[in-house]
Length: 120
Image (tube, rainbow, N blue to C red):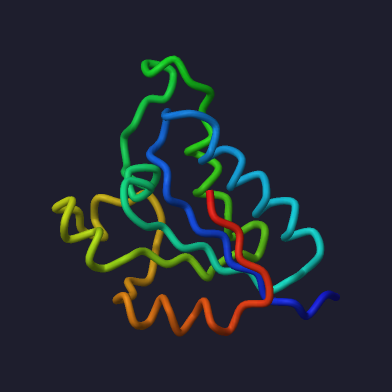
């Protein structure tokens, strides 16, 4: 077991390149090492978690449904920026998975506890 804590910050909207898929691939690969993982969604990346999207209509492969399987990989530390959620007029009910909302200070505190931080 690896004890280095790792955070992956999702910043890109879905279907605007491969950043979302690459971030998710990084998370799934890291989960094999049993490292403590924290996922943080900020800005337009929050749209990756919105229910009812059809990636095929956007001409993209469907990686969004994989977020629903995070628990199978023992990944349950999923956070969203409370400020960014409100700015997009989204609520927990709009999202496809359970998340914890953090304010900016809480995000900074969480990141300060991480050994590795990846931003996509």
